[in-house]
Structures are given as C-alpha cells and as structure tokens.
Length: 202
Ligand code: MN3
Image (cartoon, rainbow, N blue to C red; front, top):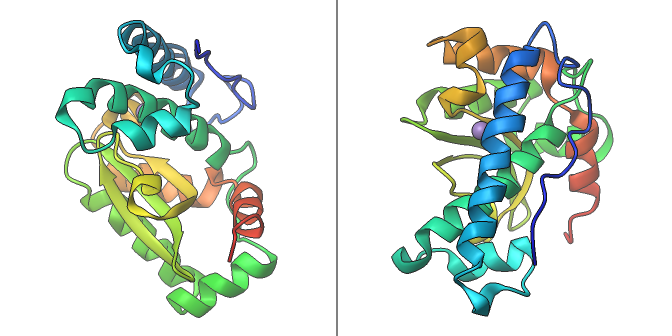
C-alpha cells in the first residue's frame, strides 16, 4: 500500500494568530509529508508489511530495533494526522457532555486537567507529545518521546499536542510553556476529543 498525506482539515492560515501559516507550511507540508515519503520508501524493501494498514504497521513494528525506522515514520504519520484534528480554528474553551463529566471525575476539575496537560508537555525532555488518553476505565495524561504513541501501550488517544520544536519554534522559539498555554486556550478541538470519547469501547 502506498500512503498519501491526509488533507489538512483547515487552511494553512486558519490557526493564526496562534500558529502561523509559515509553521503549518513547514509542519504539515514538509515534516508530515517527509514521514509519508520516508515510509513509502522503506516499505518498498519490506514486502511482509506491504498490505497492512498504518495502525497494523505501527503495532507490528513497535519495540523492534530492526524495524525502528518504519515504526518511527508510520507512527509520526499517525501522530500528525491526529494532531491536526486535535486543533481547530476558534478552538479552546471547555469540553461538553460525557467527556466534561469524566474529566471532573478523574482529575478533580477542568483547571487541574489543564495544569497536568501543560505540565506533561513542558516536562517532556526533548522531542515528543503530550496526550489525553483513556486506559482501563480512566482518563490519564501521558507524555511520550519522539514517535512513541498511546496505541502501543494499551491506551486510546483522545487528544494530543506536539511538543517537538518544529511544532512551535517559528512562533514561540524556546517558549514551550507559552505554546502549551495557547494550545489549551485557543487551539484545542474539544469536539474531536468528545467524539473520540463517545466512540470508546468502555
Ligand atoms: Mn510534528
């Protein structure tokens, strides 16, 4: 199977002034595209993986150094597609419905959720991701390094924020805490997270 770059769910300038068109041009148009190109090139030499879906490739290649490059590129395709949907123009605010109730149940308050999510992103050393995940009946905040992602840890991702420098450096330079604050206040797409929560097999 040949993979293609999934369409961005909004225009490259749709997240301004919080994330610039230039950031989206590079992050989506160059970085995400490169993961797609790399994976297609690597799969040309891996016929045993040729007919698998992206998720199947990720699960099958996880944890093996022999397939590390395939895993990294496949997981980064998945992570970035999930990231674009985790943000929206006019994002921010608070979740509604069952997810809102569950956040209060598992974190105590929405503010506590925000603090913990921001803290996870700020304290991820080097490149990686902050996540809201569902595992064994509970919501959790996690952080992962490089291309690592919840699905290989028995968790279901509900929401993510990319804390690789390429995600924010053009707009925020070294100010990762400011970027995470803006992400939570103005970019996060709660409708997407609510949909993921509703679709869980609880
Ligand atoms: Mn990225």
